[in-house]
Every structure is written in C-alpha cells, then in structure tokens.
Image (cartoon, rainbow, N blue to C red; front, top):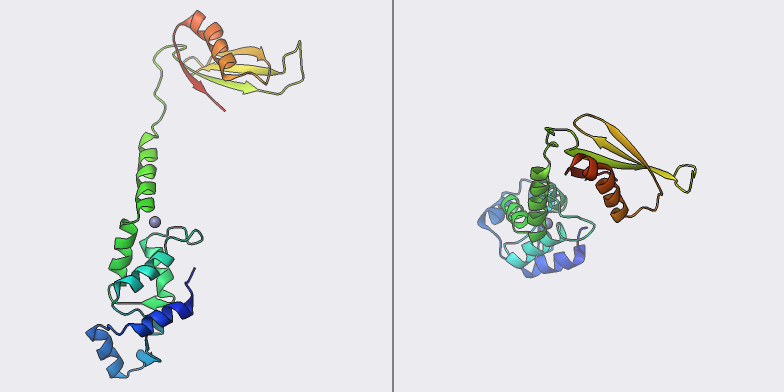
Length: 193
Ligand SMILES: [Zn+2]
C-alpha cells in the first residue's frame, strides 16, 4: 500500500537536502527532471530527498504492512519505483530486506524444511518399516466401522484389522503392539493421516 501521498509530499517539501546529481539534472531542463512546488520529479517519479527517516518510511510502507506481505528485493523495488525514486534505491531496498528479521527467519525455516526432506530410507528386512492407514468409516459390522491397514514396506505384505473410526492414537499404538511388535519384533512405525 502506498502511504498517504499528501503526508509524504509534505515531508519532502520540508527537506531540501538534494544530491548534487539531482540539482544538476533539474538544471539541464531536458524534460526528464523537473521541480514543482518544492517537489522534484525524476522521469515522472517523486524524488525522495537524502533523508534517512523519509527513506525508511517509504521502505517500511512497501514491505511491512500485512497487505504488502514482505516482498523480496526485486518486487519491493518495483513497487517503490511505481511512485518514488532516489539514488541508491536498489541498495537501500536490498539492505532493508536483508535486515528484516521476519524475512530472514522465513528463509532459515524454508532452508531447514528443505534440508529435512529426504527420501524414505530403504528397509533392510521385513516388518522393520511399516505404514499404518485407516480406512473408514465403513458400514458397521460387529460394532466395527473401520479397517486399519498395516503395510510392510519391505515385503509389501498387508495386515488388516477391524477397528472403530474413533480409535485414539493409543488404540493405534495397541494395534501396532499386538499385530506387529509381538509377532515380528520392533519396527519403525509410519502413521499416515
Ligand atoms: Zn520482511
């Protein structure tokens, strides 16, 4: 969201700290830079004077608000340049994004997530690695309305067990213990949802 235009323009008028290159650009009178009511326009964009607070306000308004959603440096630069410009804008935008705690946290979390994603290890023996799924609700039979499907990833063998859909995680653990652990020994359990 672009901040209150009038507010920014008022602040610009109070600031007369212009870089040499801006003063020279206006003097050229080539139609690319001009001054209007104490505001300088550079190729149609509002020039932001060399003032740290003013620049920071523009940067913040084009990055932090909920509806702007923390754009990356290229997108953010594009958003600002729709209205404003100043020398070194690109570097300032880059520094701002790199200095944004939220953006850096997201980056770390994203990298961590990507690092954790590794293919399932290949099991070496039967019933070492199993998956447990539940199918249901099914038409009730003897009070049971679901089936627990246990698949051994090594042999692809399947064991089925009648269940009720409201089974708890303890119930699932009990099935695992009775159906797999007692018969086949310790196994890694992968619960599907
Ligand atoms: Zn951010």
